[in-house]
Image (cartoon, rainbow, N blue to C red; front, side, top):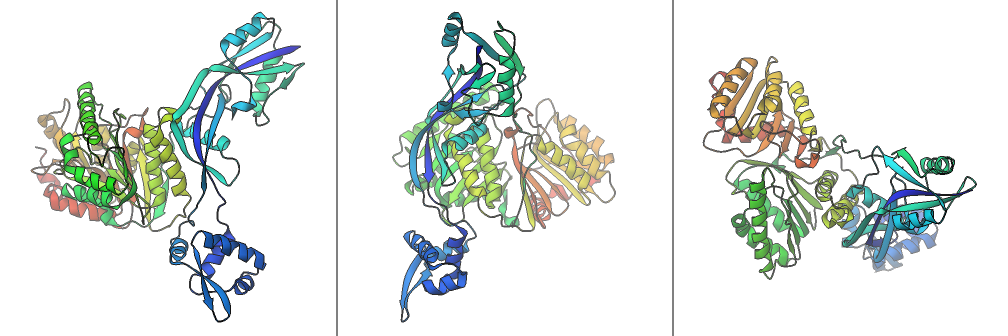
Length: 596
């Protein structure tokens, strides 16, 4: 008996750019290292490396082709030495520069709904519902798989991984870009498999055991069966991953504190930008953009490309106002000869409260800034906190956060694809190691981290929040009371203004209630605090976009709040010393603290 089994599928297609080229081998790097300090002949290198001369000749020839090695004639014949460029490349600690050839390729693949297996479209037979019904009317035994209980992930990240598996053919190829304009996705087709006498025909060799079993069991059902209900049996999204900690070197000066300091930080980053700047500023202000336009224009003249994202959406009016501002900025950009074509103003909100900046540099790789500063709306007058990240693996985590923040339209989101590829490349470099530990924190990991901090603090526990709201008690006060309730621990929550239904009288009441429990709740005076942070003891600091004392992370959208946890010698005490110089309230004795 012949049975047709129809499994629903997603079909994804796009045009990709593939980088094809042979990576450097260990032998190439050893040869280059051997000639960084002095010139050596082929014979000397072969003897030193204990390798045949022809291998040394092939390696030297390739290194010379890419300007990493130069010829240095001497009295004994021809010798070779690393060029200045080659010396910098091999001594930097990064992989040797890769010079691939870019080729274009159209790729199409399907993901079946029942187990999440995916295949190149050319390997399977696709049929639409109309053709399926035609086959049934013609007398064919057709059984349609109906999937319940979930389905395969169709996130940008998942599809990019599938695309890389299918598009890159061998170790010498990798996906370098995806043309989002060509990306398509359909969900109205079936992968049809013919089963003859119990033996499936046309099933791709890479099909998993679960899919093979499903097809065999569906074919064995009684004649006349038209539908085969199954429960999804494939991999699922795992968004609740623990933050990845990176060992590195960290300078406490890379915790930027203050208002004007944020402006100086932004100016410095834009001045160093080599090709790319990506900014996520929750709110927008056309006047602030105008004040920064000279800096942006100068970078555009150098060939830098900008993307400006925003996330305001706490109410319809806020979103509408920022959307209107985005339109005004877009108009300014269109009318500016230097910015036009190099500055892209995104017109839709991401819905995120995160404040991020990513910049690539010519000498220092990528740099990221994570914190509380709305880069394109802040007047740089309130006290903000930003952590500048230079470790490439930590920066890669910020790039992934941006990818997940914007990658909601599958492979059509160009920035998401760019950030995923950038993160992949950054992670290929060696981890530098060091006494510091850095982790990017998203979503409800903020809540876990503040609980850990309140339990771990032995001397000092300080929370900074721009606002004090109705969630202050579970969000910050309870943790402060846990820390302050232990002997020898000073606990403080500092805020600037009340929000929502909470009024100043309520704040005073909360301060009175907290004081006997060892917590000082205090309000800033003349200078406003917009920064959001948690610091405990000497070595731990978290800087973030989350108002600890007035908001909580959205479990369904973890990328709505993004921060960074730095554990480094003296980083918390250094930051608190600078904050105490601005806010004397932080040093007030608990008994004298006031909430008003």
